[in-house]
Image (cartoon, rainbow over the protein chains, first blue to last red):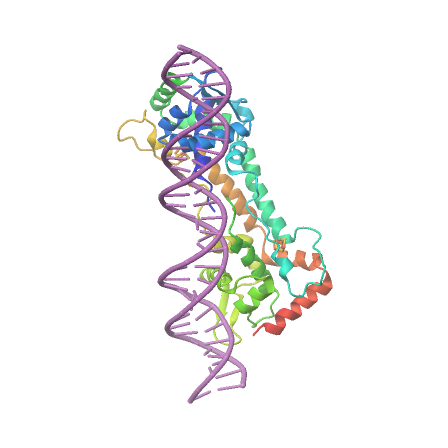
Length: 162
Length: 162
DNA sequence: TTAAATAGGGATATTTATTGTCCTTAATAA
DNA sequence: TTATTAAGGACAATAAATATCCCTATTTAA
Ligand code: SF4
Ligand code: SF4
């Protein structure tokens, strides 16, 4: 069970968009080139972000994407769920229903303990993702990335932002 | 990203084995029949449990599986990792290495903030699974499953345990 | 002693999910 | 008007999950 690579792509793209000045947009083309990713496929990830309302888009030359909210209002969970979906990682196939001892017509009232425990763990994962926002990420990145690289990347992006 | 259904199977099988009297074994055939699962494929899941050292096996008629430790010593995480593997759910494809602004020969020293945050969430998930053991599960199940069904299932299993 | 039953595991097939490409459409700015 | 963009549908390629089949060594029950 491994997350789609689109999750990593979306997180990186949002990190870039978080540094974009107000009113500017960055295109799929630029984001794909910056990260060395297939443009058409990255586009699907960005569309997921758009459908989830995390980014705002415009068409035409100088069009592209910007964040729909402030970085502090966008959590990792928002981005992960936009791309990966909100479905819980454990799905119950209700195999207890096959128990040969089960009386005819007997119907389980509620999810059993196995499922509940697995769902609690899933929720612990989501809760942790919910607790980190984009502003915190860019703060950390700005401290860890060499300032020369940080600056040149910023300029590279601004050069292409519409 | 959804866990294999083998995870559910393994958890249910372990729950059954946890109720098995000392020295008794239950075969793949019985476990598959009880849960309504394909015997040959369930066998792969049980082999994973065996390779992880969670269960003990014997061959021949009256052979099968029993837990290798007491239910209190077996956590959900043990079982999930035996079947699903220990690989973290977020894999870093190091797309930052494609940054066109990156100086030649520049080598990232350590995993970046994105990966670390995703790995912390993964660890939160595992920690929660680590905190629940099989003894707790069977305790809950015994309270929630109607006693008539609980008893008849127990007898069904004992009938087939070698 | 023999025959049946078992776990283990290799090979392979089927189905589903992920990854990736290509193309069309409508909107938009230069 | 024209070039550029996001959106999205159709489709292809690849990888992973699911499933089946068969063989082997071991063990126990008859
Ligand atoms: S016992 Fe729980 S996990 Fe198993 S099938 Fe029922 S609800 Fe699902
Ligand atoms: S997650 Fe971090 S380490 Fe992985 S590619 Fe992105 S920036 Fe690099």
